[in-house]
Amino acid sequence: MHKPSKMYTIAALVLMLSVSVAPAAIAADVYGQQSIPSAGAMAIDILAVRPLGLAATLLGTGLFVVSLPFSALGGNAGEAADALVKTPAEFTFARPLGEYATY
Image 1 (tube, rainbow, N blue to C red):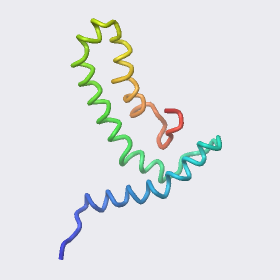
Image 2 (cartoon, rainbow, N blue to C red):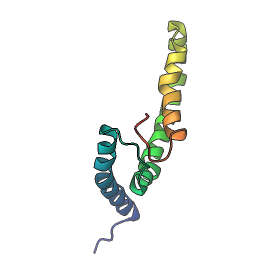
Image 3 (cartoon, helix red, strand yellow):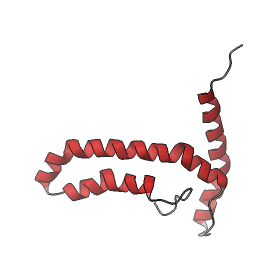
Image 4 (cartoon, one colour):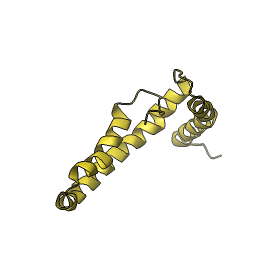
């Protein structure tokens, strides 16, 4: 028999948590309710969202370095840095755990 790997088990757990937690979090945001994020929202944040944010920060930094000569010539290096590096870095490292509404 085929034994499922740990990666598939973790992916299934993250998917189940996201399906069960996301509607409640979205509803709370839509109706303007200020609430403490649930344990599920925090778990999804730790397991999926933060690693994706880190990848986006690293990718954005690489893209910024590649585009720096062109954005410097165009006079928008600061705007490029904000969009490609600062925003993903703040989303990944400065945002409270499990909170998505402010970003």
